[in-house]
Length: 224
Image (cartoon, rainbow, N blue to C red; front, side, top):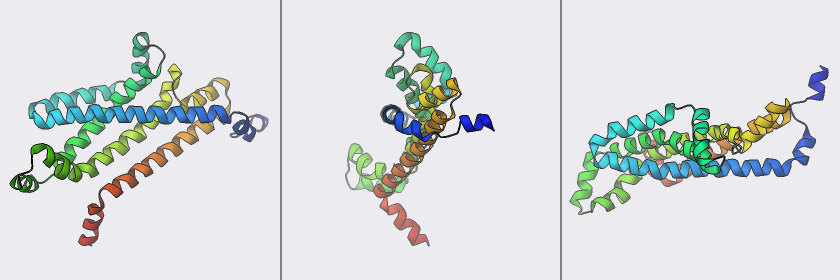
């Protein structure tokens, strides 16, 4: 009982005294998530476009992204340190790699879900392949893509905390600090903010996806 009294889950004075540190950790966490998912989306788009254009590359690309996903995050961070040092780059590279399997799969699934009749109609209207992709296929593929981005984002929020082992973990640094000092408050604050951040980002992306694809709502209402 005495230990619990002297080491409570939350010490509110900690939030006041260490707010600058907490804010810095939160900002860094968000930056790493945005960098990881943003760069991952760029790389995944190139890989998916290659797979859609050259069907024989689909298996090698998905196998490669699946292989990256199976590498333990702690091991990958450790392997990169001798080459990229203790830096943001060392944190971002694995974060990008872990998003690729989900993002590539969702992009491929989205574009392959477009009915052949829709493509034929677009071709019949004289649309160029690039315009057909941007104005017809991409909008129809968006629900799959947004779902993939949501999954990748929530996963990345959790993975960023692991980067604390190289000093770049955002909120994970608070958790690690609490573990080292057996101090519950930093752990609670870091873990709670990580969970809240994941939920907020997921809700924000869901809202964006819903706004970008209003026809999906109309379709559901029509079926009712």
